[in-house]
Length: 92
Image (cartoon, rainbow, N blue to C red; front, side, top):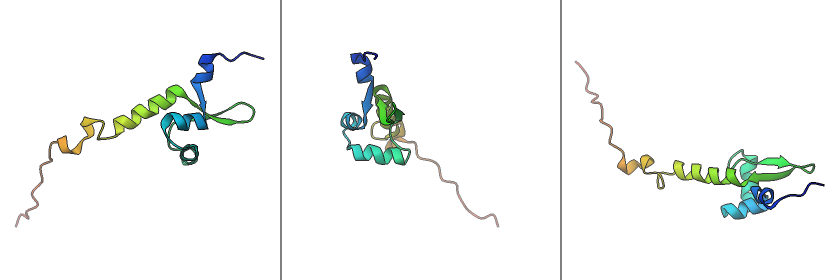
């Protein structure tokens, strides 16, 4: 039987550990998985346990930060240049 190193053991997280890492409940991760939302996951092993790569969780967190206007000033609507309104006067 192959020996699992500490690196391999920490590279993958089960649902409980991934939820703890993200500060969520395991139920939330199950719901997101069912809805095809949230961080990417996969099934591993003969029992098909749902697992998450630690690096994928970190990347998903970064994506959430970039998509949030409070964290990404480029998306902040207050800093956006106002669009010019087009006059709708009739030509008669």
